[in-house]
Image (spheres, rainbow, N blue to C red):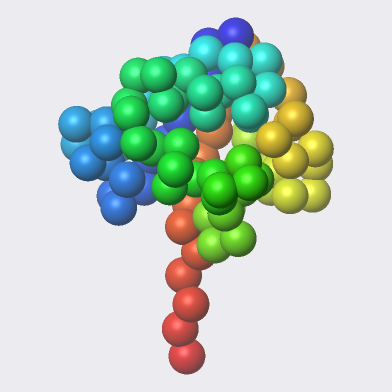
Length: 91
């Protein structure tokens, strides 16, 4: 399944400056593996040492927050849009 992944500015050094890249996978986990294969180092910025989504990184599949779906096992149907969004704190 081919999906489009929207990359935040802070991670674009891994994608050669591209704001959107293509990746393959039937689940979010597979999409992240595909991203890592094409853009080495990006998975470490999205996943923690235990292989789970980092606490301060939000990921959406077609506007649905994966934390309220199936996490890394969230399906990514062909043509889906995956957005990686670093959390922003402020006061």
